[in-house]
Length: 80
Image 1: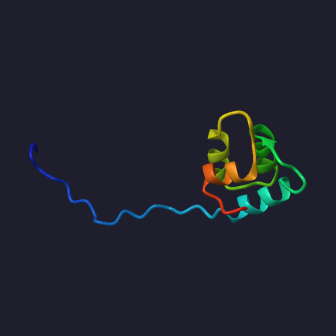
Image 2 (image 1 turned 60 degrees about the vertical axis):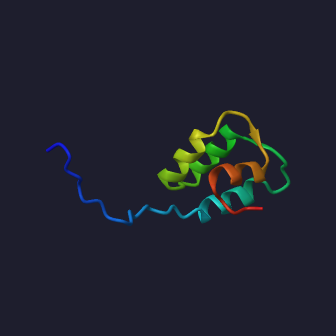
């Protein structure tokens, strides 16, 4: 019906993704490395069987090389 407002809860629950597996992977990957390509990060994340939500975030990164702080800023991790 026009003009009818649907009831929407005040708080919408958003699933938080646990970034600890990503943080651990990045710690391991960047040990002794300054920059790593998006492709290499994604490949290692798949091999480590990271959750689909984290893989989607990594896949969405533009191609290129990243320092660990750049990756964590873009992905919302806490490595550093």
